[in-house]
Amino acid sequence: MPYSLSKTEEEGRLTAEELVAMARDDGLLVLDQAARTAAQYGLVHQLRGIEGIKAMNEGPTGPRQR
Image (cartoon, rainbow, N blue to C red; front, side, top):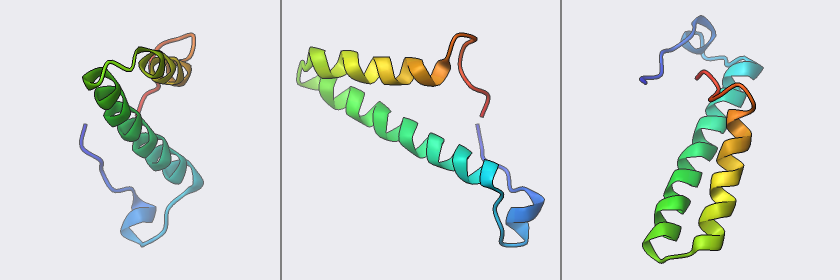
């Protein structure tokens, strides 16, 4: 999903919520890359841990809305 600029971004300022969302997205991208690398090398224990971290982000009601 493309990232759209908010009014505060257009003015050169970010809200705390926007910064948190951007950091979360960056973290999920890093986890995705780590999962691909773990799968490529058969690192099952690490892959399971990465999947657990990603599941915590989804919470009991499903994925967060970004």
